[in-house]
Structures are given as C-alpha cells and as structure tokens.
Image 1 (tube, rainbow, N blue to C red):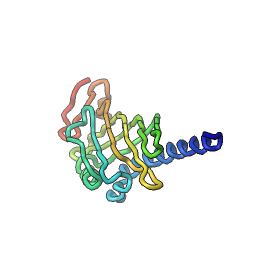
Image 2 (image 1 turned 60 degrees about the vertical axis):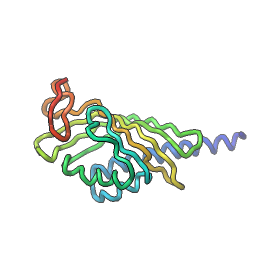
Image 3 (image 1 turned 90 degrees about the vertical axis):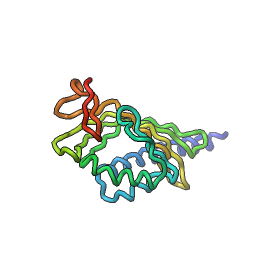
Length: 172
C-alpha cells in the first residue's frame, strides 16, 4: 500500500469514527426529545436488535426496525422524561470499513410515568454494532447494560437497582 493509499485509508477510518459518534449523539437526542418517534427508526438497520442486559434485562431482545420503533413509542408509558449523557467513546472500525463496534459509558436521568415524583439515575454502558448502508452508518445492534439504576433521592449507596416496570428496589 502506498503512502497516499495508507493516508486515504486512515482518513476513511477517522471519518467513520466521527460519523458513528454523530449517529450516537443523534440517537440520544431523539430518545430524549421524542419529537418524532418514527424518525428514530431511520437510525437503525432493517434487521437491527435492541437488547437490555444486566438488571434491566426484564424483556427479551427486540428484533427489527419496526419493533424497535414500537418499543420507543411505548417508552413514554414507562418513563415520562429521559436525559442521556454519553461519555468515553471507543469506536473500532472493522477491517472491511463497513462494520464497526462502539462503546459509550452512559449517565441517564429519568422520571417514571407511574410516579412522577420517582426520579431515577441510570448508569450503563452502550456496546453497539454498526453497519454502513450506502454512504451512512446505522445501528445494527444495541446492547444496553446497566450497572446501576437508583432513586436520585436515595442514592446508589442505599439502593443499587430499581425495576423500571415495578419500581421494586434492590438494596446495594
């Protein structure tokens, strides 16, 4: 590979990392603003998978773009407010240049719909697969693994997990 070809390859990989990071920022924005829930589907591959792991793994993985959009349409029934903060990005582009995997540490604030006074803090990791479709990147698989879901008022020292569906608490 010539020096010019090597530089082109490096620039393409850097552009892919940038595009994927921008995709995740847009994902977080659409999750929180909920302006047009159907539009979140544009960020996913047709056969995408959304999977929760850890304590929040109360449901099986959701398979397919349409099913994922339906999942997000139902979120306001569970969480009336969310604010995602993504940090510590680590994106690895595959050797083919058309697949990638990325991890983000996540801090999310949420209010439950069943009890508006219940304010939760979620600490989690996104571990996602991406695929290039034409000239744009889309989400192929989301793995959302929580490390803590606790009431803001009680803190993580007392309560480590709160079930989003039942609000049952698990002590630290």
